[in-house]
Image: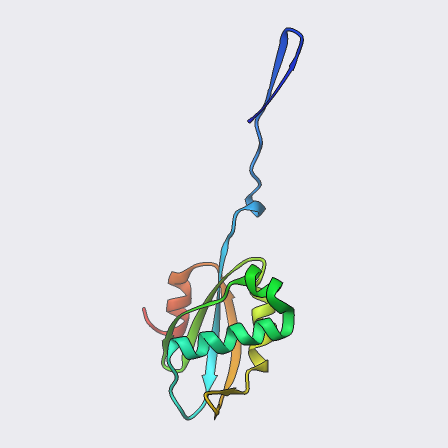
Length: 123
């Protein structure tokens, strides 16, 4: 709240929060095309390196991608509304994880974790 005073008048100005200022979550659903199985931390490290390679440290800090879960060769990456497009753009750049060939294909973006789980077949 900002207060301005002009002699005897006091004006109160309330700062209005815009919904765009809040950090809304986005969930990117992707397919893993590979013969091998990978752990969550291995895929998250590959995604973070790919985003850093494509957009630099600034976009890595803005998007802050986190792999939440993997189920039946499908996964969910959590990010915010600012950085979900760079994550979608950087997923096809991942060719190898731990010297094993892999292809990550982005499928869908959603705003709720419940819907993302339903789309990969958990609920």
